[in-house]
Length: 148
Image (cartoon, rainbow, N blue to C red; front, top):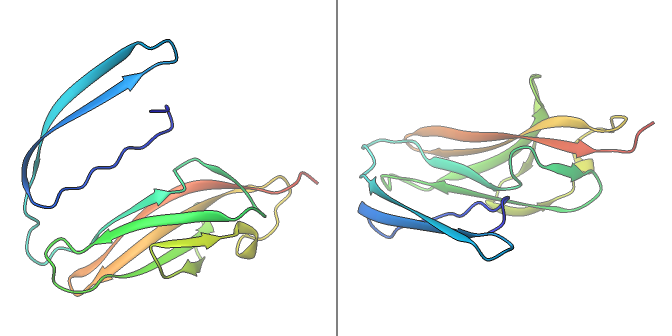
């Protein structure tokens, strides 16, 4: 697994699980770590569990290159369908733009991020809403534009 890999695990049911992750370097040396985790039942009336799978926090994206945006939004207590919206905005500033309403879509940053000499940091957020509320995850991305 590369240093920039982000393994994800999902389970079909709740309960105790033993996880093992093994890494290897370019010279063939390996190391493993074991952990036991408990996957509990979600409390009743919980909002969705939302995560951005890609891009990753801190990624630098070319403004004119198509990026695959992937996310996950799960209703932990199965109270209803989850509606999702992905939005991009200025990091630390009010106001943002909806760029998608799916969990997996292609996005060209220049279509919704205005030109800025050299580029700028932006906030990318995925929101999930079900009958029990709204939850979100936000990451920071850098949208590269040419230097003026």
